[in-house]
Amino acid sequence: MTANDHASSPPPVRPVFAAATWKEIAYLVTNLPVALIGFVYTVVMLATAGGLAVTVVGLPLLLAGLYLSRQLGVLERIRARALLGLRVDEPSPLPGPGRSGGFFPWLWSGIKDPVAWRTVLFELVRLPWGVLTFSIALLGLFVLWPVLPYVVRLMANLDRAMVRGLLSPSDELERRIAELESGRGVVVDTAAADLRRIERDLHDGAQARLVALAMGLGLAKEKLLEDPEGAAAMVDEAHGEVKLALQELRDLARGIHPAVLTDRGLDAALSSVAARCLVPVKVSVRLEERPAEAIEGIAYFVVSELLQNVSKHAGARGAGVEVWREETRLLIRVWDDGRGGARTSGGSGLAGLAERVRAVDGGFVVESPAGEGTVVVAELPWRGRG
Image 1 (cartoon, rainbow, N blue to C red):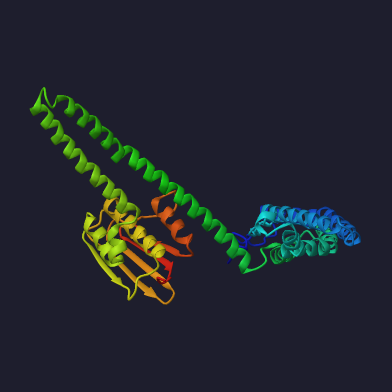
Image 2 (image 1 turned 180 degrees about the vertical axis):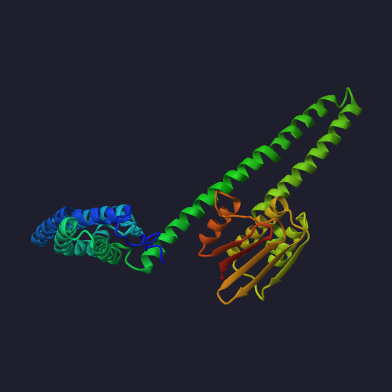
């Protein structure tokens, strides 16, 4: 079952009408008035735009009419979702003039929009079908009562097929565009969150220590002649603050992009992360060459976050990290023998990791039965360096 199919199948037909059957009857009865409105609008729009096609306003008028046809498709999808339980993906919106290379390319792309034209076809064929379903459903309420649920289900299924076939996104490319647009939003949000985190860490950590250090050195300078011993003690304390500030800056830089990853690759970088984990971790990296820097950075970040979760929440005695390449994919497997029960729902850290991985056309799977440990498999697209 795909994303364009209904979320759950209707309940089985029974002689005693269920709520789903009454909703289907309501859909079939309202087919006629809704189809009549759509048919009249579509015929008038095509006749008007076609008659004016030789004039300056003809093509812009046709574009406006097709845009309103798209909106009729939106209303039909809403009606099908409410009464038939059919969930259909929304097509990608039309790009604006600024994203189409100018007015005339934008005008032409809107006029040849396949989503709008399939909606036009839908509105044209719906009128005779609407008359038929309206008549049968209304008449059946009086003379076909014993078999009406079965007749209604048959006609409703034909309606479902019609909506799915004509009002769903054009093809796999449409769905792919929607996924990429969603992924781009995730990447932008993630980058903004990372910048806020870095700013917060600098402000609350190293910056605060450096301010305290400057004040301490100022006081030590004032006491240098009057109280040399006190000044020496303050300088010694400032020296300790400098070490702590440097350590915080190193930790912050490691969280952004560690030097060992740049210099020596994933094997050394992940071994360094594993050494800081609170449980023993086995690391196995089987790569004949290094992936692209962006993919390598995401892989490092994923493993680092997962091992932090192992340290904080898993209650494990051991864990492992495996990284290898299979043709065009980079695979990462992180496991532990802890308490399990990890989920990607509820705004957890795993949900954020899953979004980040899927934003680059990757996959993220969590298997974590309670009491049996956790296995996380992340799949990233492979791109070589250069």
